Image (cartoon, rainbow, N blue to C red; front, side, top):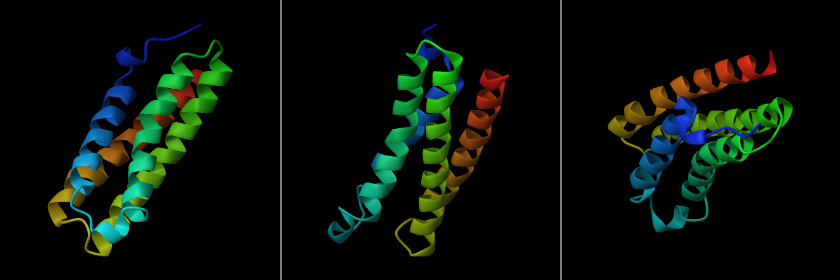
Length: 118
């Protein structure tokens, strides 16, 4: 069936967040290059890439599977943003700029997933 991922609001939200996460994690300590910085960046990038890959699939079932992966990665990134804040690697501003947006993204992905499955 192929969908245009650029027309999906969840893609735009996820893409914007991935860029913001990359910018905000640039100042993480070098010691975290292969730790929290890498994990958070991978989770952030996984969301839009799963949306893109799922949108290219032919069936709703396949699309839903990739949306489910995107939802899991968005939830992981949301947790990691909170963790980074609690251990002092993210400022209050970083946290308040990212965490609520991940909450919105998780809810939007769940709603789209529910729609696709029904």
